[in-house]
Image (cartoon, rainbow, N blue to C red; front, side):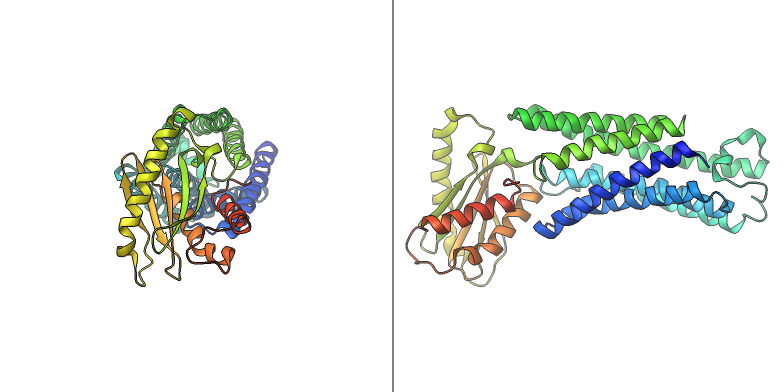
Length: 380
């Protein structure tokens, strides 16, 4: 039994379990579909470390079973990192899938299919072709193997390098996104959190390279990177990556009267000298939405989006068709649409009875303030 490897895997399991439980609670609270990317990723890491612990404790697995565990763990790590990439992209893009991520998804799928084929062959021929081998990793000692085993070993080695390329590619894409976000951030606290996440990501990248040379050191780097990156992010707040682009959320009645306005001032990235320009944009937004109220009548509750100058407007209506909600953002993202949808669904339960043509009173406004802060993760 490799005690050091068992200890590292046990620590990794504890970290993964904490991340998974936190995200499960967050999903129960916010119910945002995009969180499924992150939850699925953390679950794969959790299963991976659990199986690794079992593999450390019970070293008597057959060659075929050992090959199955090895390939599953490798493939699950690749998918977990790819899901993390998709999750982070929801903060900055309308759709996490683009040409690059689709290509990576296809490449990872091909790696998974290759892993399944190798595992199937290992299980099918473990009592014949692989009868002299106990551990799947023994295939790396190509000089001591027969010709047929050497071919199989070469295929396994090529698949491992291919998988490593997929891991590093996904991590580099995350690195580029974090670097861009740091350069655009105006809040120093956010910058510090992002820099810690970036450091953790580099530990992860380095660990992915070193693990092929020294398994224990590589696992230490991978575990350290995972802990630094994700605990920094989770401690910073679930929506720390997006809040600077939020501007304002307004509620209007059916005739276009402004009933409520919430300004994300302390989360805005612009300085006070831009307030006048923002007021002009805000006035233009009100006019644009007022002109569209006629188009939003009826039973269709589909979220609409308007591009106004350098600002995007997400527009929706309450279930009674009496109130129109508008979220003003610098850039529309998948997560913004999901958060706005939650506010749209819950707003009626917070305001109760209200006068159709009057601005909301202080009590209603306070409830709405709290709803918005919680929905966008800004009140944590």
